[in-house]
Amino acid sequence: MNKAAAYTRFDNKTSIVEQYAPLVKRIAHHLLARLPASVQLDDLLQAGMMGLLEASSKFDGTKGAKFETFAGIRIRGSMLDEIRRGDWVPRSVHRNQRRVAQVIDELGQELGRDARDPEIAERLEMSLDDYYSILNDVSVGKVVGIEDLGVAVDVVNHDGNHDDVAYESLAKVEFHSALVAGIKLLPERDALVLSLYYDEALNLKEIGAILEVSESRVSQIHSQAMLRLKGKLKHWTQT
Image 1 (cartoon, rainbow, N blue to C red):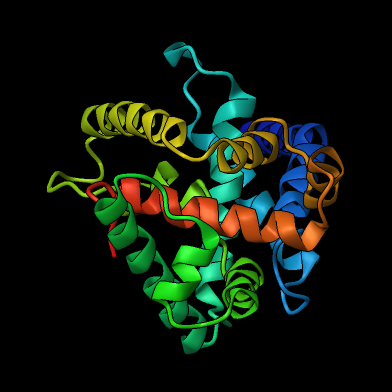
Image 2: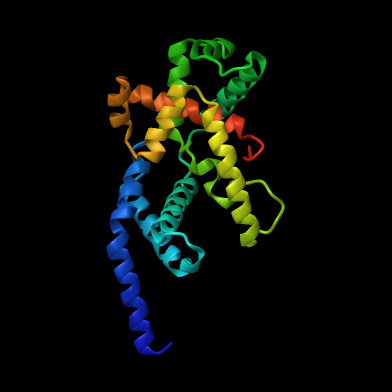
């Protein structure tokens, strides 16, 4: 590569970083709102910038997608990878999350509807407050979000090559349809919280003001909604 080409490439990357730095910051703050204090904003921003640069080198404008949409997925994915690499989640949180998800799924099949909070707590043989405490731990101890249900290729079950772009695109389209159908089956309040959080990008405090509940309660509803949704999509996700 000659010097002129190298300078052009450098200028392009600099321009992209300057233009989309606000997008990286917005995604980082959105994730940080439900992570413990041990996760540093600077680490998320650094990972996000790496995702942005990766997106700029792989983006194909002929596919019809907007760069911001494409970059947003890459940025968020890089941040989630960074979080997973530094697994600070106690084993008890993972264990309780799996236990709650299993009970929610079992009760849903037995009752033919989504189980209510007191019913879940009773099956878990604990008080309602203890059940909510587990949901709080899940919320602040692990990223339980739409990202973990299908955005990343590695959480979609298939035997094909991850480099097979055509298959990957088809899998994502099919997953998105299943995701929409799953959300429609959630209790109205759960579905509303997910919509406000992921579609409207509101934070927990803003959602709490709309629902007239505490920020902590919104966090609990979000965790429970994601565990319900994960059960409805268990044929798509890995355990």
